[in-house]
Amino acid sequence: MDRLSPSRRQTHRSWMRRALEVAARAGPDIPIGAVVYDPDGRELAAAHNQREALGDPTAHAEILALRQAATRHGDGWRLERCTLVVTIEPCAMCAGAAVNARIGQIVFAAWEPKTGAVGSLWDLPRDERLNHRPEVYGGVLPDEAAALMRDFFVPETDNGGP
Image (cartoon, rainbow, N blue to C red; front, side, top):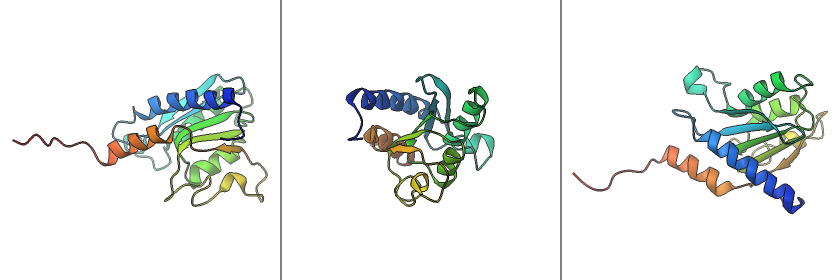
C-alpha cells in the first residue's frame, strides 16, 4: 500500500467497505465478499460466497463476481484494467481465475496464511512464468475483514446464565 497515492489508498478503502457489506450477506457461507470495478471505478459485479447455498465447490465470491463482471464488461471475459476487491486473500483457484481473466489489480483485506495464493502460501499473480501479472495490494482494512471471519467461526455466546 505504500506506493499508492493518498487518493488511490482512499479509493481502495472505499471499495473494500463495499466488499465487506457484500460479505456480511453471505448467510450460511463463510463471509467473503468480492466486487469488480471497471477502469473508471464503476461497479461491474458484487458477490459473496455461495458454496453452501448452491452446493457448488467453485462458488467462491471471487469466481461469482468475475463471472458477472465478464458478462457486463465490454471486452467479454478479458477484464483488463479492472480491479477485483476481495475481503480475504484469494485462494489458488480464485487467484488463477483472476489471472486468466486478465484482471488489472487485485485488492484484498486480510491475509490468509493457510490457503492464500496472492503472497501468503503461494503467489500466483506475480509468478513470472505466467503471461499476465496483475498488480496486488493487500492489507486494506484487514481488521474489519478479520472481525467478520472471527464472528463467523467463533460466534458470540450468551454468558448470562440460565
